[in-house]
Image 1: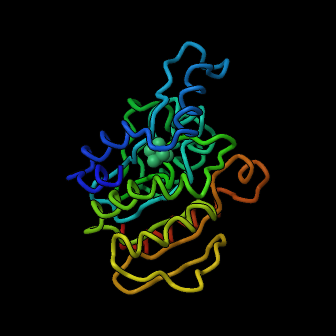
Image 2 (image 1 turned 30 degrees about the vertical axis):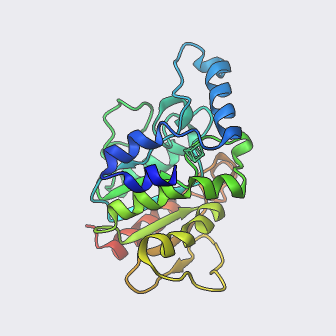
Image 3 (image 1 turned 90 degrees about the horizontal axis):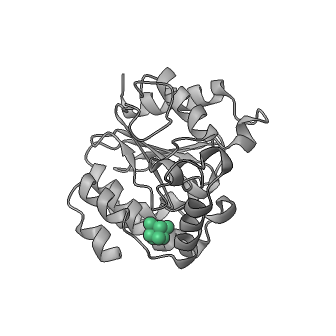
Length: 237
Ligand code: SF4
């Protein structure tokens, strides 16, 4: 699996390869069971039920790093943050920031396009209770590292959605940039900002989960601030 990720020559090649990954038995079983049993509202739909590749611009200056696909969102539609409430909040914000051509993300063929931005998850298969194990995170890491390596020439800023993504970023510094991660690791927080030499800046943002957005812990204004900062740091108009 590591070797296959490392061999990917471009993003379409990587996307195709990750879609055929079966490296984590627990997650393979879960993603397929969810796709088989389905949620009542989507009973008539064919679920994707496989790993969910990254999405967005190949020359991205901003990357958004999430946790993992949602069981009935990305795992259903085959596109990250697509077809669930988290995606509604995220893409509305990206549209306000001028980074998405439309405010909604409902299906893989809905015409959504991103500008200067790419979105991917630290773990590419939907996990039970949205909780991948550390071993699953580490097993999936080569896909993340290869994707970052492929957009490295333009990438300037990474927005980590939540503490899991924030923690998943640090090994990328060593694996992709040959830079030792800071020790101790900077703590995650909403608005946290870390910058190093010749590596992308890292911005922390509360995850766009319903738990955060329904309770007002993360508001649209807070998201707008994060993407304004990301654009400034990445020198995106
Ligand atoms: S989580 Fe990642 S490594 Fe594990 S099966 Fe899915 S794509 Fe493969």
